Amino acid sequence: MDAQQYYLTTDRIESFVKEKEIFAPDAVLTIEDMRRIKESVEGYVNLIYRIREKNGRSVVLKQVMNIPYFRQLAEENGEDLGETVTMATERLRSEISVLIFWNTLFPGITPEIFLFEEERDIIIMEDLSHLGLLRYELCKMKRFPHVGDRMGQFFARNLFFSSSLSLSDYKKSQMERTFYNPEYATLHDFIFNRCNVSSLEHDIPEETLPLRRRLIADEIVQREIRRLGEKFMQDRECLIHTDLHSSNIMVDETKLCIIDTEFAGYGPLCQDIGRLLGSYLLNFFSWYGDNSVSDIDAAYFRAHLLTTIENLFTHFDKEFRALCLYYQKDHYTLRNLDIDAYLNRQFQDAIASTAVNTVSRISCLGLSYDLERLPEADRLYPIFLILDLTEVLLKKYRNFRTPAEWTHFLRLFAHQNPKSKYHL
Image 1: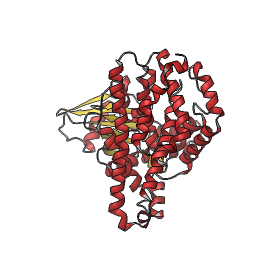
Image 2: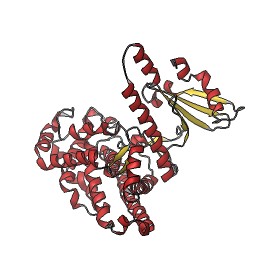
Image 3: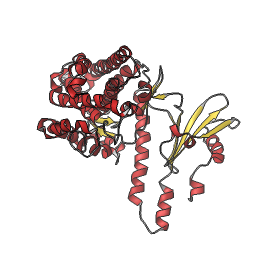
Image 4: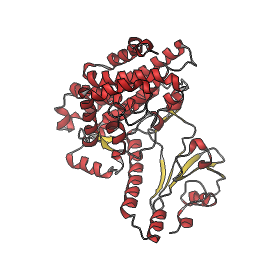
């Protein structure tokens, strides 16, 4: 199949979506090439179109551009990309499977998939363009009280139904094979091996160099980073997103959708919770460097962020306990589970993971928009706070027994580490 046959063009999309019964034969459609809209582009490796019906209904069509066509080009040049192509196809299939599975567990938590044509790598899904990316919305001081509630419930259901808590060894191994993803480990090197407090490879303001060197020389800190890195690679606890930061969540006042599951696979839940809460802490500390808002407004918004963190753990705890109680009679594992100890381990591992995921986003490479939006000089104090916080959390995460204890500590952290400490 050559490129002209393989790839959909604007003039062929209308007949395709009607043939697949996504829209009625007499529907009046408007087709928009989203690659022409800079804010909507997912790089330039995919074709992305928004298809709108006159009555307002719309979907997004995405076609991956790098599988059969590049295999043909490689073959014409005497090259063999068989394994690479197979892996790309498996990754796409896995990505769609994750979205469908999570939407079954928690309806609406991922975009609805209307079509997946594997032959040409075409996906038609729910249009989420009316939603905003959580990261950018938080940077506008927009409040979304439902994020903590829903994400806590989702985390509990996902942990329970994709782990050995509810699955036999055989069924869990089947699940792991179903969601096998060759891209799962992609983020490991960036988050752990080249972490900003375990390596000097990445550029961070020069003023922070003495503190970074001290953390790199601290064996307790390094041992904890290694532990989390090994857990990420070896602990096949449940199905996780792995990169669940706030730019992979779309929201409005009532809806929340997780997107971009390209790295999803079996791993420890603490990575997903830590990745998300890392985004919240990046935003939390960014307001200490934002001189465009009043101290009172910044303090109120920081309080909202901490409330969201508490709500996430509260709803996670409540949903998880309810599931254990409901299914306890059917599962030997649950009848012998010390739920309090289990949830405490989850909570404390999430704190440690939050520390590593937060500090991974403060260097020039991978700098979070929460800090990037600030003038360069104003980023320095938030970055110092994050570095100091990383040390404390990695050394003392086991000291926190409740979410309220942790958020109280976070609320006072800048007060206990004022600008004068860093000669700012």
